[in-house]
Length: 138
Image (cartoon, rainbow, N blue to C red; front, side):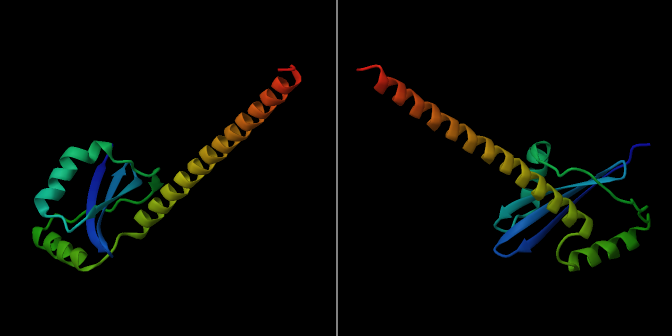
């Protein structure tokens, strides 16, 4: 059975307000970090989720154990109050974000090296072309 759980944590990370989307599908956690800037209102967060959720770039999935949530509404309310008092995000989410940063870093490194190699080749070809033109006796 496929179980999907989603969570959004909004917190102040000086100087900006940051939202961390956590998505758990089939026991795999993937995370996306969004910077809001100024403190977002509830309706602004909802509007952002409705309009831009499909465009978010989540990290690659990380294995995680999913706990069954209690059904008692008073307990849920206490847990929400307790979570809202805690700043920051979960450690699994932090690991997933770090993994995403590392992957992006590797991609940028490969693209940068390809670009540098192409520029080097272009300069070499230009240099060779100039040498050939000099020898043609023009």
